Image 1: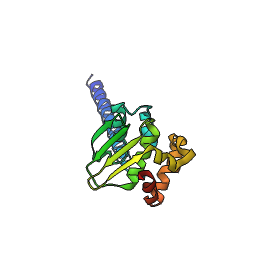
Image 2: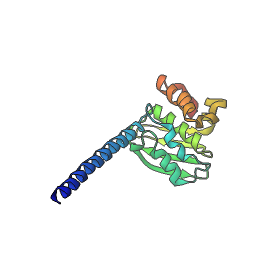
Image 3: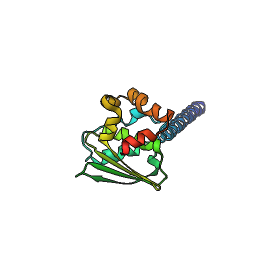
Image 4: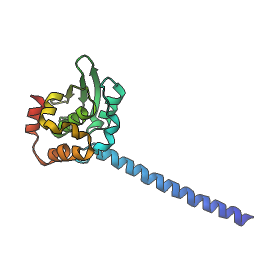
Length: 172
């Protein structure tokens, strides 16, 4: 009888240790994915497709979108200006041009009636319009909803070149 109890306790301990090990590794993986989502270079656009919406007026949707884009760990207050279809997002960090371009493009691709994004950083602000972003991409704009196309036309070019031309077009 004691051998059986000892065997059961031993098996239970092994199973418990196995569960703790698996959960610990899963937590590490989730933390690594969160870190990767903070950078334009490693952000996975596929993970924000869930926030696609026809209307910017869905406050929780657009806020959650920006909670899952690069620099979200520095995101501060947000405002929706429904009369002008403007989303204002404040960041408590210095500006990062690659992130500005990436986040604005992602937001316009995913939120169909969003017309203006006002990104305010501690050192600079950027006002970007849908019209300017659509002009930059031309006929390719609608295809950016595909994660592979987004990576090819947005993410990779941002990482491989200077962003001056992009920002000039986006903010003109």
